Length: 396
Length: 159
Image 1 (tube, rainbow over the protein chains, first blue to last red):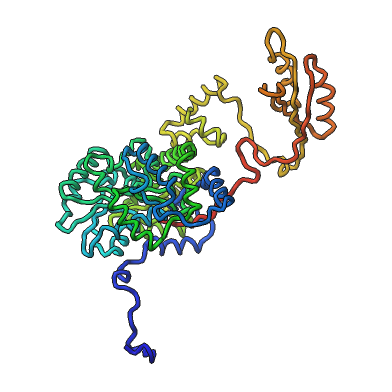
Image 2: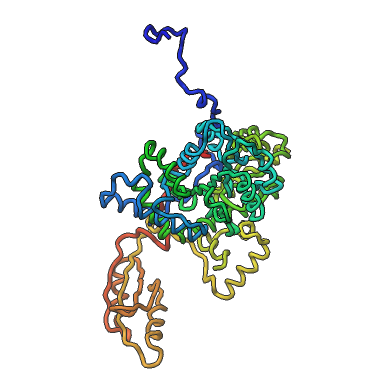
């Protein structure tokens, strides 16, 4: 190599191969177009439109006033870990030891990253269901695993079928990633299917990473964690956070609960990459768990009403739309328009200044759909729906 | 609580059509239920929450702590009702603690409010004493912040 002489002929590739292979996020291209326009009503936002409840913000301010500005223990402040263990026991019926089985992370995103890196050997296969959150496949690849997608279907309400899961398993399959309620489809996992999936995982000795970030936003109020099923706790990493339920996206705070050996393994990565989550966010999270339930329920009820409104209007205007049971997204089919997801989203944006996210940003199975977030105020939703209606009429 | 009330309490002008879609009802069902709530006086009225300064008016408001003598029949109720009936009185509540009634009085200027208190309120038989506190500035009214907090800094598209 002739680095010293700076010869352009022998230019060295600095970027690692597995990073080069990661495709650019489809959402990012679209984001840049939307960001350059004004007066857009965006149904493309995957975060609550509510600001963090004041008592939680106030707790963060109070933490600063008391000089809480240092590191915490790598796993997170003991008081918060104990509170998380209590919360998970109470709401999900799974008992974790707050001192050895709970890790406070910088959002569920980090928790997913360290969980995968802790368990995946190069070439191990990790199965996830698709359409799904944009980070799953890249996170698996970054952990040197092989991402294996299983498609879910609109006619099943985008739930994962155990039979479909079983079909893609190989001797190299190490883990299964679940995300119910699902971003972008709002799909949930009915109990019968959940039990079948648990049986498959036990039979094939698989680890489950379950991202339950939207679980509070389950409108049938019957969310059940797969970690609570017999024989599952020891093979499950339960991932959750504060962003969606408590409108705390910017605090970047989440957690992982898992048997001590798995938690310890995740901690080894977390301690060197993050050291710990922000102490201010941890203090705010503690307040959210202790006193945030009423504010959370109020937001959930509002989301539910908006969902009903959107589903009803989309179906009425001929965009077939299953009723999502959770999260804050509807995922209508736009096939009847004859346009691709991307064409539909771009044309709608240009002509009516309404932003929706093309379904294929969430995997090839999302083609033919668009994701519309109802984390948007009711009056804005009404305007957006009227514009989409006008747009469809013009398309004919 | 009735979900229709929940919606109307945050937006009294929500149309029956939009309410219906949010609650999986028909507009006719929503209209009928609202009529019922109105007839049962569960819904007492609909009014706009107006920002006085922006509307170009500057009323004077005072909180008055009133001590009264309870009566053998009816306790505080008769005198309280008598006070509450004045147009100048915007609200009137029976309180625990160092005084009995908390009365909010509104008038066009300081003198009007002062006159009302000294000539009307304080002279009612049974009123023992009044303590008047004039309001200087509003930060929050009926759950609405002045000015309202805006949170418009979200990115336009996020995963």
